[in-house]
Length: 220
Image (cartoon, rainbow, N blue to C red):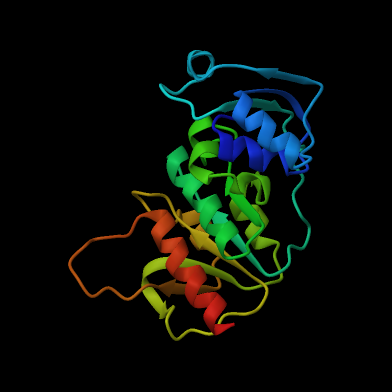
C-alpha cells in the first residue's frame, strides 16, 4: 500500500499491518491520533519512499499488510455487486470505491476479474478496499443457487429510473467490452437498463454501477 491516505485507511482497518515506512510528518500525526502502528515502523524521506515504491512519487508512506482469507458469504444482506469479467484493475478499484460510497460491502467476482490486491486496484479504490470484501467464484453456479433476485445490466430491459428493486438482491455488471457473458445471463432474473439519451454505445462499467446503485438506493 502506498500513499498517506491509503496507508492511514489501512491502519484504521481490521487488516493485519506488518510494516510501515513513512515520513516524520505522517508518523507524528498518526501517533497523535493513537493509530495502531506495527512494531516494524520506520521513518523515511520522500525520496526513499519513492525509490522503494512502485510509483514515481509518493506522498509520505508505504505499508505491508497480510491478505485476508477469502470466504464467500452464504447470504449477503442488502445489495451485492456482482462483477462478470472486469479485466481492468483501475475499473475494479473504482467499482470498489463506488460500492463503498453506496454502502455495498460485498462484491462477488468471476475468476477472470482483475486481482483485488493488484497495486492499481488498491490505489484506485482510495482506501475503500478496507471496507468492501471481494470474493472470486464461478459466477454462473453461484448465481443459479441464489434465492434473491438477480438483476443484470443490459442495453435493453427495465428502466433503472423507475424500476423498484428488492431490498436484497444481486446486481451484475458485465465486461468492459462484451457485457455480461451468456452463462451468467442465463441466471439473471430481471434485465435492467440505463436510459440512453445520446449516441454513445455504452457506459464505463464503474459509471454504470454508480448509476444503477444510485437509483436502487433511491427507489428501494
